[in-house]
Image (cartoon, rainbow, N blue to C red):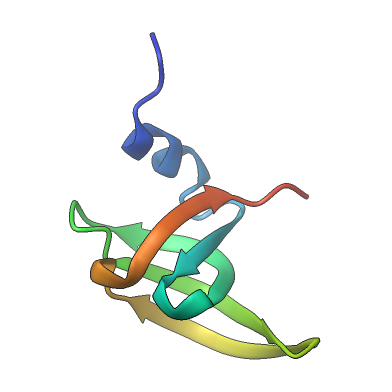
Length: 75
């Protein structure tokens, strides 16, 4: 059976980093702590690379309307 998208998120929940692409060209990486059916996300240890410098954002809530895609990070 092919995994459903939310099943894939369940597999990485509280385990490994995810990369989230947002509207406006932003990309954020962090540990997925929770989500809902609207793709509102809670990230821990969130960080964003801006002009080659990593900005640590800490715990972050991302509104689902801004999410283009979310993918498990390859480490």
